[in-house]
Amino acid sequence: MRFAALLLALGLVMGAPIAPTGLMNKAEAQAATMTMEEQQLQAQLVALAQAGDTDGIKTLIRTKIAQGKASMVAKVAKAVANMGASLAVSDATSAAALVNAAVLIANDPSVSAADSTVSSQVATAAGLAMARMWDASGATVTFANGQQEVRSNNPTMLAAVNSIVAAVNASSNSSFRNTVYTNAPPGGMKALDSNRPQNNQQASGGGTGGVGGGQLTGTTRTTTRRTVQTPVVTPTTTDTVTVPVVPEPNPGQSSGSPT
Image (cartoon, rainbow, N blue to C red; front, side, top):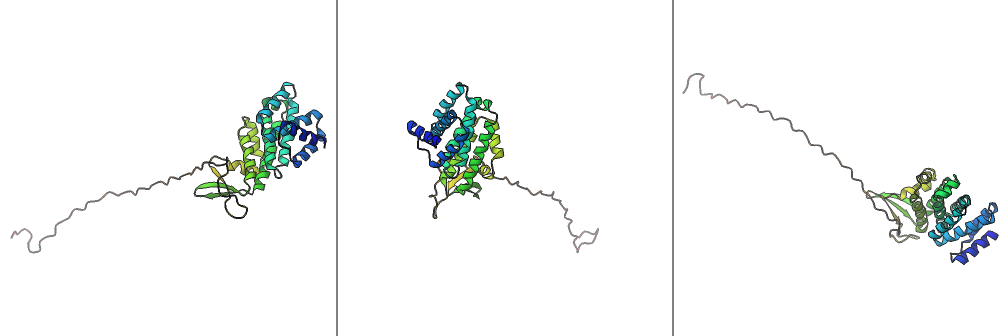
């Protein structure tokens, strides 16, 4: 458990939340194929991701790139993304933090230039994580009053998957985005589609285990209603034919003999 201990120590030193046991177990399993320096970098990235320290991640990555270690950064980013996908169901919040960190790193031009596979592998892991979270959230898509609604009894899981969708959509790398949208499993596709601007996401209200009816923070979408214009058919009016009225003859009057 050397790597798990390192991860725990870094979390304590940096003031980050202590990594869950499941996360440390995943990290320990991956450590077998990493050098000590790679393990240290991974532990640092995990701690920063858990703390939500995006600026810290960027600073760390820039430092490693400046040291000529972009390839190592790419390798660790792929490992972190896979770790997130593995934790998608058991710890969705941590999983989303890890995947989002990997997405951020993979979209660095220097990192993607050093490893041509980092973009596609992180994209695949992101799609898999979204699919697993969506399926586990029990989310359903319904149509009512001309709008599409996404409902779930697990708002935490749904919020986690939405955060990954947001990270993917924020990427400036169109190839990366296309890879996610093209290769995500069915659940991931539903998660991506549920975040379209015309959709509305709500927590299920009422009932046992229901979340009290309010809209999920950060997941409200403006609903667009499409009105179909029905053509108005104006009946054509035929021309009126005027029939001349012929006066009837006076029976008491003989033809040609005026009275």
